[in-house]
Length: 439
Ligand code: NAD
Image (cartoon, rainbow, N blue to C red; front, top):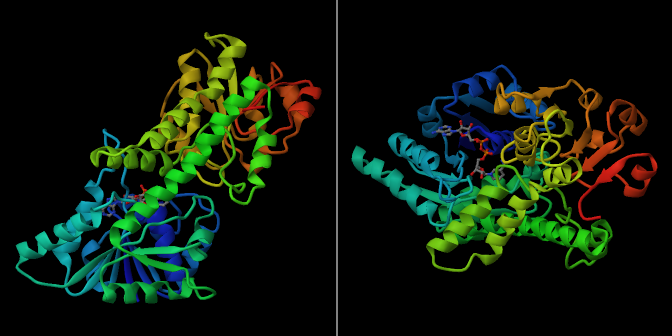
């Protein structure tokens, strides 16, 4: 099947590549010429394990193309995915300008029946807006082509994106057209051969499913962070509590890890957008609001611990930061807690020595020529002469470090573990002053 994916970001690139890997012909479109240029050279604009290899295989196989030419891509495709960003607007609602701009372009070039698929995370009712925008352009052109708009929200996790897309837990398709459903079933057939995991529903329910899924995961994280804060007050160990409650199959272990708050391009913006949707519909968003408030506070928790130890004036202090991406296995720093932690420490007079296995380039881009931050070539150089180590992102390589080496390199033997990666007793026995979350 001929497929166009418009927006070659995290979701567009992974989706397009995996669909091509199943034998379909996919054209990935982006209006960012540099990105398309990189992809044509075989360079990946994002870090995702395994992506480069699978892109290469499919480009070589003649099934995957990259272009800025949206007209050709739209006209040749049977299915057109919209996979552009939906960042939060100032009021927290999802900004639909990119989605609707793509809808206009589709309307400008439509030349026959197509299925237009909203893959971006969009507020309930967006499919209608996409439909009206396309129809508006067709009316302007005085042509009458049939098309269907469906919702197919994406659930991949950064860091596991290829695996998640190729072997999804479920494929949600919101559609009111039997013809579109048949085409989508056929497109995804080979992804669910073992067991049919395509779920059809109405468009609005599909749009809502995505927001509800991200919001419940964010809720689990904020819940655990609140429990962690309480554990500190009542002298309980949140790690024991986590295992204790996770063993209940009704609860499960996933997303119960306390830490420095959730970040990334999805949870923060999707919780905000759902709050906004609730407000617009004059219904309660108390739980979602609490989830967001707890998370905002949690992003400051490590700095609170630092100032508790060192005082509010950190002039002359040097802090080593391990981990900059919002989670391991990605170079994505959108809404990363590390940004808040670093900015707050620098505002208080500190200097930062930072290391991340993949996000150094992104960090340099974000912090620009900000003073008082240097990037080191490896994790141990970051510690050299620092007053404390702050573990912010739990990359595997930080899990079992050489503590003797850390001791020798640190000026003061202090660790602030924002991800509960180390054993408190052992770390303290080892001669460190050790701060963690909820223990
Ligand atoms: P992204 O910012 O990485 O990529 C968006 C891409 O769209 C960019 O490359 C941009 O240049 C391109 N673009 C914007 N306007 C365009 C236009 N008019 N024509 C062509 N290209 C255009 O975003 P993302 O992380 O891939 O997210 C895309 C959507 O998927 C969002 O709604 C997001 O919430 C959702 N989503 C993201 C993830 C994730 O883990 N990143 C997971 C599930 C769902």
